[in-house]
Image (cartoon, rainbow, N blue to C red; front, top):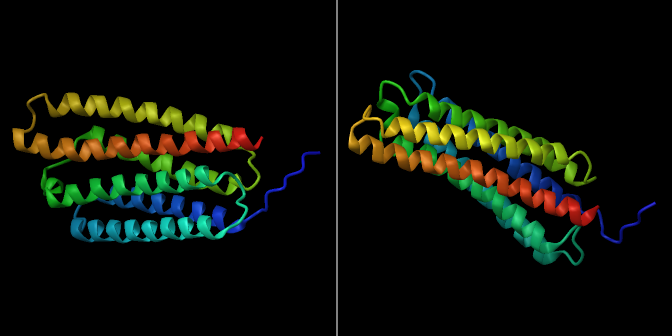
Length: 208
């Protein structure tokens, strides 16, 4: 039987879970932008609200790290995981806000590949949210980081095909520049989900 001298500090796991579920809210809001007649400003504002909530969760996590004598696993890993979850939210919010500010939702339709990339992000968010509570036991996590890696590869393919479409001459040069900024934020969010999964894998290996 394996014994651990680390406490089971539930607050850390709760904060990771809350941060991850905020990412689900973020990707669901991005999906709303594809709906006909959507109030784009409302979606952008709600994304900003979710991002501010994520910032508060991250600050609460940092305070908890500094005020806890013995943490459930390495402080650096706790800090890294919290920071990376927040990074994902920053990219999601940036993508939604740029879509609104640049008026891109007024186009007849957004590229199919952009919707595919958002779908990948939505899947990554849901899988991440399901995985965070399992940090308590460190069990059943391997399938999570394997699937996140697979989805990141799907996101990379969608990103490359989207770039091909953007530079095909279908859109005017200014629209291409605007869309490229949005697409880069979406791709960065996809990568950031993988960074979260890599950190979870590192923690699981250390604690096994």
